[in-house]
Image (cartoon, rainbow, N blue to C red):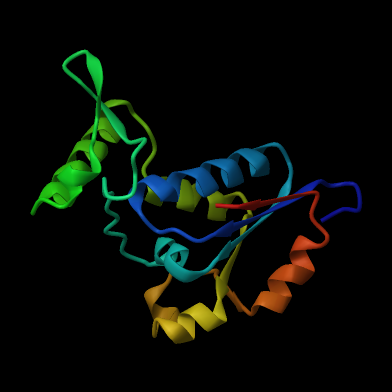
Amino acid sequence: MSDNQKSMSIIVTKGTLDWGYPPLILATTAAAMDLQVTLFFTFYGLALLKKKLDLKVTTLGNAAMEMPMMGMHMAMPNLIGAMPGMDSMATMMMKDMIKKKGVASVEELREAAVESGVRMLACQMTMDLFEYEAKDLIDGVEYVGAASYIETATKCDINLFI
């Protein structure tokens, strides 16, 4: 990184289908704009680094979730999420909508991030806590503690928490 190059770091804490998009879209966009980008994956966000992704979405705790249906936007009430099979249905609907609209998959965005030189940091404490092994995750990941991330973040122009 040159002295004049802008930089950005993002703490990634969630690993669901809907929460996988924001950090990867921001990271790839920033990298395309010539920013040096670091993603720090911790807690459930670490799941986004798994070699094989099986991401899901849930309506529980997501009161703002609306899906375009029958020419309007239908709210997905929290109560629906408590019904058996609803998470699977919501996931299927979201994946179908992503495909129909031609939106890149989380896997494709992650690959673009790696190809763009985005630095991928996995929280070592979370690795230990959830008993992940390096073989479970994609290649090119660095395994660091919080202090190493903080060292990076203090040098960044932009720091985000997602």
